[in-house]
Image (cartoon, rainbow, N blue to C red; front, side):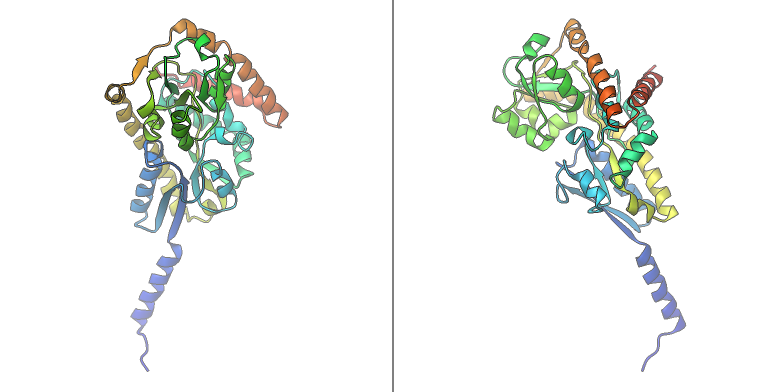
Length: 335
């Protein structure tokens, strides 16, 4: 009978110990890889590199959950990380919907990141996420939405009357206030809705118009409507996070910062090529008159006030969250 040497036993012990501390996370997103998910992809690369392969992430595009159920999946630990958009289930994440109010005045992605972080740090937001066994890791900053549509361009408030538009959150509310008919079909459903005539127009950020194909069947795009955007955090399952070693937690935090930087750089490249994209696809760029935008903006304040009232009625510090958001917008305005 052969016996293992002391050295062999030590090597096996080390191997089993290394295997025991290795961490593999599943990450649920949707659609396909695009500017909206580049920070997640970059994070997965950084985490693997910095941990020497002991901490890895498998990013799944729709294979783990659909986009309306990612927060539910996080809550039960079906996967360790996920991306979701507040407008898909506003009743589950009321606090962060303050970031989706129309005409908040955010001007660029860097400002969007700063405002989101300020709101995410509020105890009411963290407590609400805790109800879903989730903690927010980072945002997915998107520029102000603009609309692509078919047929004659809609460039006046009056022309929005009766327009069926894919728009969620505060953007949908502001469009509804002037007679449009918003629908909250998901991003992955938007192309079919537009192609079949279920909607006349779709409100997206530039990357989504590209990724989900709405720009391919559009006749026009509003370059300056800028009614607002949606907020889409990346969250982690609290139990999975707490189970990480201190080293892995530090790697994750550092990776989040670097991933956001990568996201901003990557999105800037996309925006630089947007004019060429419109020309290539034969989409007319239309400018909405400032007087018309002012008319549209008039409907924003009642929506803001209604949000505060509704949030307060649901046990949230509505006025406090709203004031924090406005202060963050002003404090981080581009110079």
